[in-house]
Image 1 (cartoon, rainbow, N blue to C red):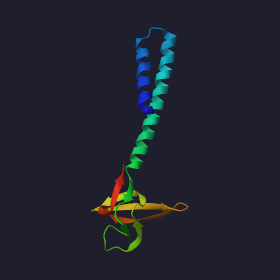
Image 2: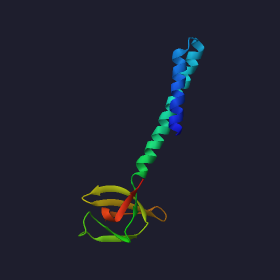
Image 3: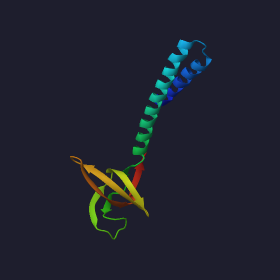
Length: 122
């Protein structure tokens, strides 16, 4: 929302720059326009990063989800996640998702789980 607000102010300042005939006011509006464009791009970048990061979050929907070392049930089972456990999706292959779970003091566990046992959080 902030990016949109700054985008509107940028265009208003740019319009004032184009319509003005006063030299000192035009120089001032040029600086204001550039400043608002930069702030708009910063807010937009932040919003896109947040959206991209959120699109890669997931939650276990099955009662239990067995996490394997590879993208198949024949791989070794590493650990089990229970319903409601949250994680970050880091890969996807043939109906399996690679996930990373952060627990405790930044201790990370990674593995593969069947896609049918999880849901993406948006």
